[in-house]
Length: 608
Image 1 (cartoon, rainbow, N blue to C red):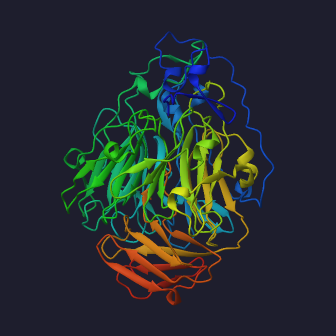
Image 2 (image 1 turned 30 degrees about the vertical axis):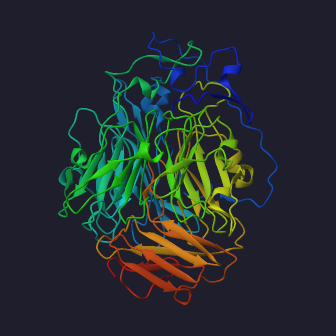
Image 3 (image 1 turned 180 degrees about the vertical axis):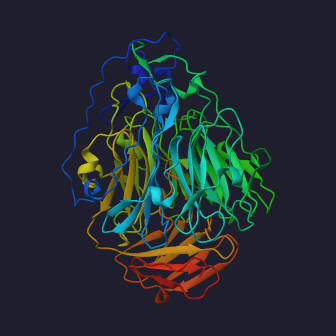
């Protein structure tokens, strides 16, 4: 979250920081001096960048008020402790927990402090999708009302292959694993042996995937820093006059954890055996970046180099090579670590390879690493236009989302600061950002650019808030992908995609033959003379889980030519366009010759 990029932004003009005679204290240097705590001053003024007149139809409608979703993620900031714990916020978990064909929403609740500085958990909520953007709080009925620790993230995965999505909740002090027994969740944390027996636990994001190819979902959990009340130095803001939240540079990283699934409801910790090393982890993404049919792991670390673990595992023998520095995805363009939070991947440029996008701290550009397979990635934030949004933002959750279904993956970023007194021109609350991908069929990959269309996003995009995790999900099964956003000290937000439905789409739900969730698979849709590549991935954004279905935008094409699925098992399957009419969802089970249509509100029964 906290690294100085060497540049100062005034508006959208970037000038070298050395031009200014006054020394800048920004990022981690703004508040990592250990001094006697001062008196917290009044709250700083929050201002918004000037909104422009939208240049097209509104893209998203905020439907939160009438939805029934009302959870406010609590940080505990009202106690005035100014601990780094309050800075992380929460994510969003998307799952069809009751298998009725409508995606439901799980929201971690955060926490607060007791009178003696006890760290307590605020309630989490599970909202059942009733259709038409109406939701019902079913937390108690579903067995999720007993989460009593300070929570951050939600990782969804069917770890026992029974067709019902299970739920892992991360947080401070502990994590919790819930087994979904046909719509009722049971806490199996202790029985499954994913509880981490060490003095200090602070998990942020997590992701599920069959990492060793044995047909069972394994679990990657990333952890943050060794903050506790016994390691809580007093820190100040950039002026040195006010007490503020400490930088993560004040703390040591915690070990990340990799758990292999034993197949009997238990897991074993193989972190060291697999080559997983500690880091100040906030985001994690599992995706096959080198097309070898094995899911790799990318970790977004805060103020330390990011990690890319290439998967060399065999069944029961986890082996990963940490290759981020070698491949060019560990550092900024200047060769220094960023304060990284959120992450996603997509074939944004039509090259057929999956590039990595990482959100970073104020005064740092968000990082777009273009995949030049097979040898390396290239940092392309400036030439693609992403850096033009300026360096005032602290980015958290992010997703590639083809909001207009034209076949080019756009980018959404949830923003919000982490310190109480951000260095100018930063603000505590910030606007989200929406970037439109300008790629058209036939464009050369290195010519692809993005343009900012934030003001076209809708009224929510003109508001300031402390955004954190986000997830993309088609909540009404209309093929237009919606957004759910978690915010600190404010209600979560549901944004309905209302962009005019002028383009066609194809929705896919994949089921593996051995492991039902084929993370690492690749989808190739041939349409209109182009090939659209989409990865089947896990986790991503920040502390969140997206809709497991994949929507492929087809532009004006009324049919596809061919669909190819490259399964992690090594099987390739192709389907003709005649077998897959567009503008609807299809369920495809590995090895089955005939896709099954998914009618609105219905899915194939588990295991069918």
